[in-house]
Image 1 (cartoon, helix red, strand yellow):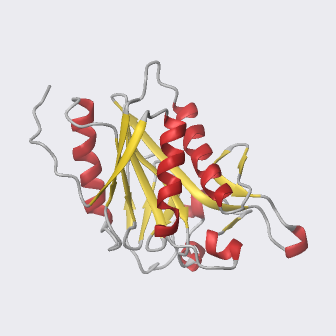
Image 2 (cartoon, rainbow, N blue to C red; image 1 turned 30 degrees about the vertical axis):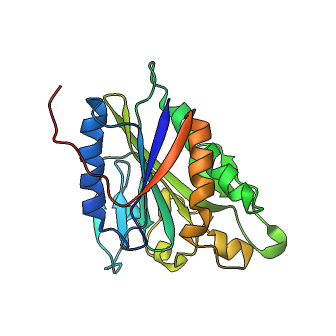
Length: 233
């Protein structure tokens, strides 16, 4: 991979459907080699997104106070919203495609990011995302600090990961997050006992994600990408 281009969409939370449409537009242009490998970095307005494996028992039983949107990524239901960094890599993967290896790359980037803040992230067998080990002395189970859900079509990725910074964790109480009932959800702020916002982790995220994806360089552009007119290749 040559240069990786980051677009930071700013501090104003993005409505989910607008962000999803931007992903789709970037995806078809990346498939046609009309844009470079790009990562969208943003915060969403509060929303629950239900992946293809979401069961009815995972969904809210009552009105959760935010839309529930069925989407085309893998995985189950999760929440996005203010205080959570959401990253959408729109990148072309080398052949032969190895979806598991790509997910491991995203996990590795997140583990390195939270490591910069003094937390030891880990993988849990059979479960995607990044976790913190149980702390029995504090009465804490294994806790998920970042969720991952991807889609790869025509060799190009969509969706990505969400890392909890200083978001309101009570949103997760209204669902079975990622279909997992026997673990908790946490954030950088909750673990470190100090406020760590999305802006505080942008540089580390850009550095580590570019490294694991093998980019030769990277740069950030503030604002939404200006997309060229699509020409069907």
